Amino acid sequence: MKQRNQQICNYFKKKGKCVPSKHNDLKKTGRREEAPAYAQASCSPKTHIMFLKTHKSASSTILNILYRFGEANGLVLALPRRPSFQLGYPKFFSAKQVAGFPTKWNQYNIMCNHLRFYLPEVKKVMPEETFYFSIVRNPTTLMESSFTYYKHSAPAFYKASSLTEFVKDPWVYYNNAANNHYARNLLSFDFGFDNNANYSEKYMASIISTIETQFNLILVTEYFDESIILLKEALCWELDDVVFFKLNIRSNATKEHLSQETIEEIKDWNAVDWNLYLHFNKTFWQKIDETIGRKRMQQEVDKLRQKQTELMKTCLEHGGAVDASKIKDKALKPFQFGKARILGYNLNPDLDHTITVKCQRLVIPELQYTKLLYDKQYS
Image (cartoon, rainbow, N blue to C red):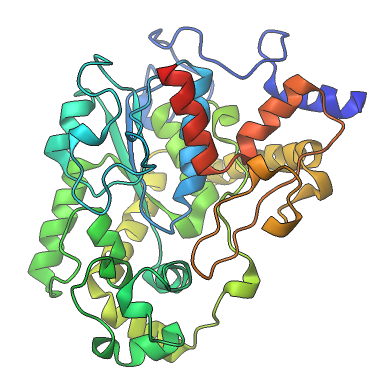
């Protein structure tokens, strides 16, 4: 027990104390040891951040990273008004959806809950210097996840026995009913575009240009570790700030194997999302080459994975995720929705209280963490 507590304390310590890593002077300028290449002579941690949390794209893990950084550094979060855990989704975002706006806080630091992006309203809440980023996922696996998760909430999915059956002839099942955005071009819908728009090169050029104008960085789910390192560099954070455990992950038992024929049909049905993904997958690697470089990227990814492995051995009982039915602390049980079976974590039972709290922050599900931070911020 003492050895394990010392290991985790060494991870979280700052100036010899077993506390979360904090930036004590966030306004101080000066070159940091791991400053990104494009920061040149100086690099200051960014604390005004807007993350467009796209659906089924590992975005809950990123939200956890942002929540932890915000909590550790006393930042103000743009949280949804109760009782909602989303910022007005699936309607376009409106500033009135933010708890306390406009009278409680003069400005907010971090916005990262689900919303349908609408920049004019976001700008009412977030400062001018805000860093905007989001994440995209391959539409074939995204739609497989969406079908499982929203089987009973998207009308288009109700009568289809499988995703394979649905995409063979989607117009048999699909119409413009409420919540059917989950069934077609979900990425472009989250970015604020018409998910039923017809694909054309002119249209794609227009929406890609808009996204690139509005966002500083687009990450890619399939290269999640590399995405987290690129994000760390762009935000000028420390590696300890972005270490993570994967959250809101599904059991393999609920995943549908897709044939190549089905994959191609999904691409056709989600042509706008597919071309968005192709473009931002390409620019993602261009961004790496222009900033950190492939060699250093691999070195940073290796460091991230090593820290992650050490923390999992220290924090987690059995060292990994378990089925929700096996989670002992119900406060750490993730919300189960649709046909998906969402995994969670058990903490090691022999950690002292301080260390337990640190480990809890790495595994606490989104809804519980949102409530905790809301209570803390508005108490």
